[in-house]
Each structure stands twice: as structure tokens, then as C-alpha cells.
Length: 89
Image 1: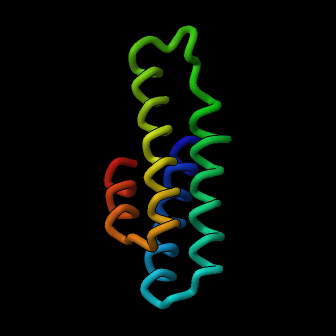
Image 2: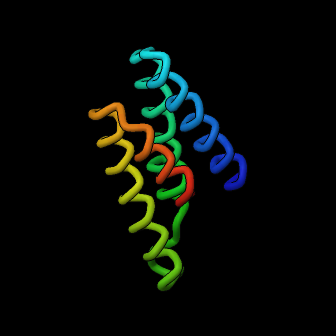
């Protein structure tokens, strides 16, 4: 299930990059929001922060960071930020 969420995030990022390049802002917004939802509601909420130790804490921080970067990429139509997030994921 986690692997499927990662793949879905990467697919949404690729679609978002293409949408920015073709100036389709509605499609960009749809897929950046989809990626954010998967990260926040799927990946981050599935972490066991009480028992997961340092690994869970590090993943939580990473997920928080990529959500910030996705928000910034959306605001600035920045494909480089989307690529950064894809590489981190």
C-alpha cells in the first residue's frame, strides 16, 4: 500500500510538471493537491510516531518538508521544486 502511495505521488508530480510546461494551471493544481493529500493523509498519518523511533520522526519531517515545497512549487509554477520533491520521494 505504501509503495502504491509513493507511485501515485510520483505520477501526480509528473503530470503537474507537464501541466506547468503546457500552462494548464487547473491540471497542475489538481495533481499537486492530490500529491499533498497522499503525503499528508496517507503516508504521514500512517507513521507510528510513538513507537517508530528516529525513523518515523525523520519521515515525518521529510513529509512536512515536501508538502511545503509542493505548496511553493504550486505558487511559483516551479518545475525544479517538483523535481526536488520527486527525488526525495
